[in-house]
Image (cartoon, rainbow, N blue to C red; front, side, top):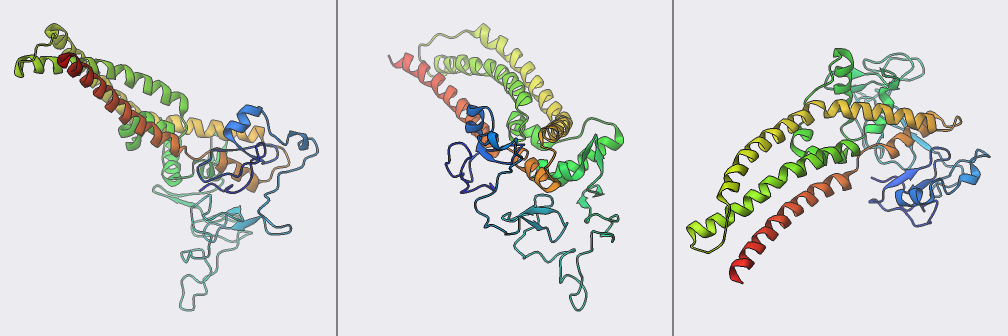
Length: 337
């Protein structure tokens, strides 16, 4: 959910909706529509940067609490957040699992451990409970090439536990491959979804080139069927059909190989992307920003691009259907006319 719903854009003043793509200024935290930020080329409140003035959320009354602690992991979140940006736990008071007040014991007296010196479950002194992943607990300050696990979790967002475990496995084993089913089945749509735009464009271009022989083959095959089986006088190239059958066999192998490559190495590509983007945001962030604000910056600028990922999947289906329709229409129109 967009945390800036109903907040006015710093440039155009139009309130954000849940579907808007929001860009946050790394200097003052002011939110902009992505198109507004790119059109202006800088923050709309740039004149405030020299004075160190930070953007203030107009929805928060003066003097109200700016943050709320997660009842499960202890991470700080924006006061209007519905879910923890680190572990995804609801912040509406409904959570009754380990770490919450009132959980466990006959009298319900289990208290969330103190993070100022006590141990959490499988934790270390002075930190919240670790992030539980399929490979076991990962501590918030665990290092991943100069980036902490907490920063990765905030940036990755959805399915962060899986990615932290995969990243940890890569880091400890030294191997750069795993197997990602989403990368295997959805190829460039998955890459667009995870904001891996350059690899997505490359893979999409390759897929498009592999698609061309199939369309030519479909056109000539349809002409052949009309001529041979339906006694419709339409010219076709039998030699071309034969040659395309061999080419398509090769393109099928190439496409399958590309799918396996994406499944094997998309996690490594994403790992490099996550580490690189977090370091860029850290360098761009002002010296006065605190850890909570930085995690919020990571959450807003990272995460996924669901609209683009799902949109590319729908666009692909529409293109395949549209091209097939045009081929069929042109052939049948030529026969009728």
